[in-house]
Amino acid sequence: MQLPAFSLRPVRTLIVTMLCAGLATPALAGSFDVEDGYGDGEISETSRLYVDERLVATFRLDHDHPSQTAHVETAVSRVNHSYALCGEITIRRPEGKVEIHQVSGEGVLHEPDGHHLVALGARNFTGFYLADPDDPDVVERHPGRSSLCAAPTS
Image: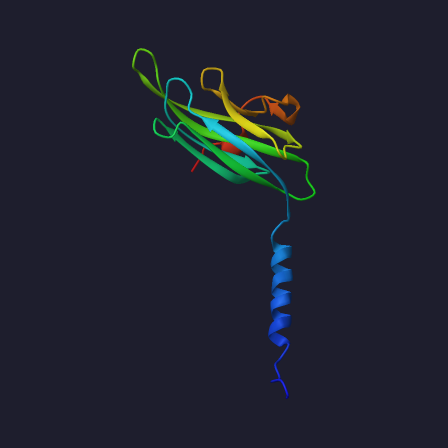
């Protein structure tokens, strides 16, 4: 019995396509989690997390959604990663006045794979940064606001 003949061209095309797709997407080396939680006096919060200048998570918090955790995957061949947190926090003062604060911060994550980081606010809702409560050496904070979070000028 003779088997039907077929062309290897579609198989070769598929293999080449798969190899090219693999080269276009960076390989992932590891991952970590970032948790953002609703703070005292907050009405709402919207914040963005950038890792290596790439938006990796957006957090939207309010009374019905008091915390959110994002799983972040990191690219191969890098153990240190820049980060920036940008956000807008709406709070209610004890006397009832509502205020909106633009918050931001940046720094470097040192070998964050497998860690659980938390987003924290400081200085009366003006500072914003990541921390690892179990290993403070994982996060290096840079003073001041993040230039990545600058509001558009046009």
